[in-house]
Image 1 (spheres, helix red, strand yellow):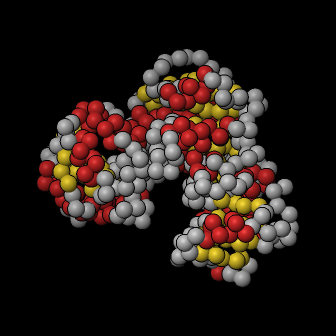
Image 2 (cartoon, one colour):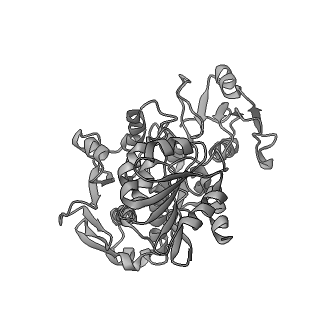
Image 3 (spheres, rainbow, N blue to C red):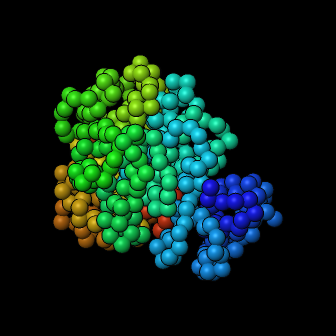
Length: 439
């Protein structure tokens, strides 16, 4: 047990995860101090008086210096400069939870796969919840008593696990992201790899056969669990291998043939077929039959701001992919596309926009660059395609409307964080959709 009744606990960060951990620990008799460097941090009413809140610049460092006991770090807190053992709410959850855990990580696609796994399980009569980096914080789900918890885990959440061991771990892909937090890409990979840290040969993992980083992990025997692969490039009719095409998913897992035709799904694009394959593998490994899986796929609604068609005006489609916050996600959104007017930009997370040169040359007729990174985008991609600068989202949509002709697609796929102009990627997508509706 990480904590004892009456033992003080310091929680870093007063966001959703931090408040959830505070609620959990207060209910178990622990005196809690909640530290946050933000001046506007607050705790909900039910915790007022039960939690000591220390907020404002330098609060986290000050509290760490004064607190010798257990430290619980929220994923949004950069802990690299603090030489202290820490855990997080995922570790606390793991030590309390008695059901099955399916954990999903990767640079892109995590939320869709997590939500789809939970949906298929629920449609099959299994009590399941999607949590972690999506939906509820993990600790808030304990009261539900679900048979299965499907956890979306970011690299930040994986940094401070200790004993966490999922029954099924899913690694979708690993491309450059969060390099404004990690010193090197290798450090980012190390964080993602921690999802397998405590797995054994009794557990399962689901892996992208096409991803070069993941191939290195498997060849170096960094992953002890039994493996299922999915691929959009290789065609192998062997057990525990799923093949993905734009027409759908087909292959065997645990000796059973699984099929998911694309025309029966509400998800489009090859990258989404890879997401479907990962979800199919996970629920089959949990024990669902092919018949249950087929039924469970029905009725799944795509998550918002992920290649979502907003509107079609005189033959021009307007698509919201605001969740594409890194270079790898933009590459996926452009895959196989033509006649794209791309709206990109925001706050750069350390990505190299030059990596998009080949894709934009093949797929885009114009880029409209917005936000802090607009000049970087113009400099990196101006030789591959025409780039225009836009003052804000409304200006970008207006310019796109003036340039587009029937058959074109105006695609918001920023490749950047949103925090220079918006409160979140959801806010950014909503502003884009509003601008489109006003055309």
